[in-house]
Length: 103
Length: 467
Image 1 (cartoon, each protein chain N blue to C red):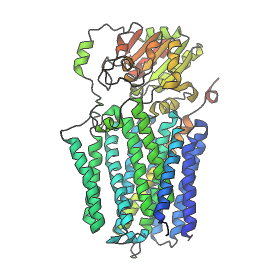
Image 2 (cartoon, rainbow over the protein chains, first blue to last red):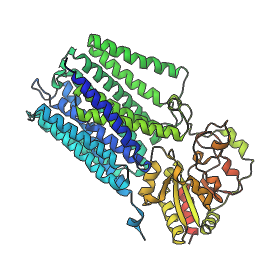
Image 3 (cartoon, each protein chain N blue to C red):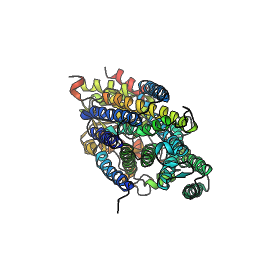
Image 4 (tube, each protein chain N blue to C red):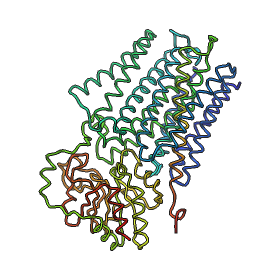
């Protein structure tokens, strides 16, 4: 019998939870705020679905109800992607060691 | 146009890059590189999506326009936002992820053909379950984050809103969502789909309003986790590996942070969620009672004198420092102390502030080197060998009652042992108790000097007196 592709995706999902578990425990507590902003940015990879929805104009017209939701979702996700990565970068730039600064 | 198999491989690559992005955060040295990995992963995912669709119609222009609009707004916010507003920014961003998940789910429901999920009225069962779960979790994330945002921003009061039958109502609505999803699968009815989303919005509001201001670190982490699970749900619908991996990463990341925060407050996750505890407003009766106890209060001059004659000082920042924006003045004070060869370190309690790592970011903003900043367990033994503890805007996290009084609501919570220092300086606006509504017995100790003032003003005054 063939294995349902869903099982493969479920396996990826479960394994990723484990990877996430170990990776996140190794994050230093002083970087917990950047961790939140970067996880925010990467979860906006949901933009992939938004793009598919927006470009799927099989009926010929560019804007149908489905694609309009897609377009709005692209805007929302793009705010998050740019905002999330840039603000993370801004924060990380501030973390400096002693010798970098003075003495 | 590239084949489905090839694009799946690229999505996997972008998922791995996201894992590396989180891995980089294990140390500030590698963190910047980690962020670049994350950006690379995102670019790959977006480009591959375009390539896999192939037949570029005119709507491509509109997609690019949407990207540019969203990107500009995001970039604008990222550059303008002050570091003290980080907690509400993160809450706001969570709400956007949640809403995007809802919209993608709606788009997939209305046009399943585009996602290879079947046709309208006959969507594959598994896909239907996945997309409705994704939409429901996304909707809860959205409305919950909006409430969290309003509370953090101060637009809404930080005190918990409770009413009788609240938990029962939440339970009914929660069960209702599952029942509706079940019927949705049987009937494929559009109306039921919309109802699921609307009820989920309501649930999001209801679960966050009873949670008080000081429990916000847990709430933010929890919403972080939800946004991940929502993304994963949509990832299953779209059969997209990058989205599934990312959703799982973000989901477990938020869950771990919630766990760390709960542990740092010695509270169970459930009791935080059930809420009604973290009132920001102080309880008046305790205040009246305590006013009679003798308190030693001093001014900036006394504080400067004490610190000048010390050989080691430990700074304990808290939410009050963030509110007063005192971090820059504080750094100035520390610079002066260091010139006099006084050893200065910072001690951070995990729940100091309104989100995980809040204090660290503020200190980093004020150019405090991160190797002078220590976590609770790394520095707690040093208090006994230090001359002065300078507590600025923190309260409950220093309260020794957590170690001594089993009846206290914060008993068992790990606290910073500031009372072991030779002398303690407490910058605070008044004697009012902290969020837990309990009095801090440190205020009345012989070796404690209270400095009643705004944190920033007091620190600036001390700086002047150090000359």
